[in-house]
Length: 230
Image 1 (cartoon, rainbow, N blue to C red):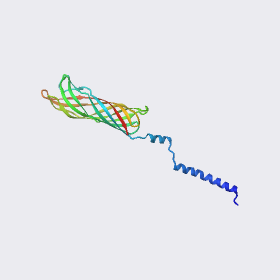
Image 2: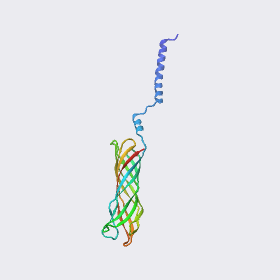
Image 3: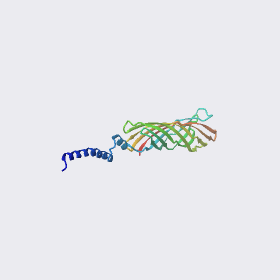
Image 4: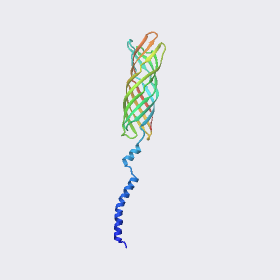
């Protein structure tokens, strides 16, 4: 007949060995993520963002005509749609490419007041590197700086002028703005940029002959629109 005390002791010893092993196996089979890792996974989202804005273009009215004393130039304001595409390297650092096109009328000023020169279309793709502040909840302000390359195309002249040409130009850009996010994806954007744009122009006048000079546009770009974060 088996001794009951020895049997009980053996069962207890076996349980002492097996229970920790079974607990370890259960931990391996059903791992529980740490709270920080779970929160980071929940907050992860695409680095891509787009905005569609209505953009007001307000040039600086300065320029000159070589050889004409007291001459100056004026450029018309305009409103145009704009698309920008952003890529976030981190929550704070992003690159933004701004795309849009508009036109501007060129007129004489100063001693050439009242003389309409013509119109040119402007394509100013701009790339900025931005810093986004993330400590204000749904309100997300940012600042940026970058480069702008402005193309002038489809120039047309007023009566008395011909061969209007405005040179393409590489310049700097500064930016400040904010997004106000309604949810994870949708928000409202307000954006202000300053482009530093001074270029050369030339044209031929029927009475004055060949003309040329500098056009200092340095426009402000004032935008408002919708943000979508993928």
